[in-house]
Image (tube, rainbow, N blue to C red; front, side, top):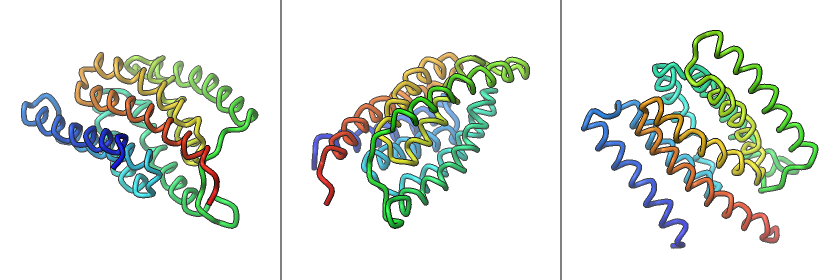
Length: 214
């Protein structure tokens, strides 16, 4: 068993233990705890290129949608619904999105694709920021920015692009202080673990990309 696998397994175990402990201490709801555990497991499976990350991810986004809505993070709540749809699409792409309906391999984004992603993030952030401000959303700009970045990162992940991990690293680095500000301490801790996993995911996928095709 590699050191990376041991660290990932330890992170998931720590996530589960922390979730249960904070829930028993009434510092988090059982729904947030379920989101915490399934989220950590989903990221681990994604790093390992395991297709089971998608069904577990669908459960994760369903529970997080409720948690975020209750905290008035409306863009994040709505984002989970979009994630659900993208998760189904990604599940199919990973299985049959390669040449001749084969499974996908890790690739790099093209310059054109990267430019389109940047344009999408800028335009969507501006539009969402204004919309969320009008409806009284909390932390409107950061909510809009992380929503836009997350959508792009998820789409790149569906295509197995290495750059998807760069997006997740940036998103997680913003989410940690944002959720602390919203008193979602368990979720903030989860995204701290996500940040570590995302860095490891980038290095693992980059290594796999450099390996010759079988």
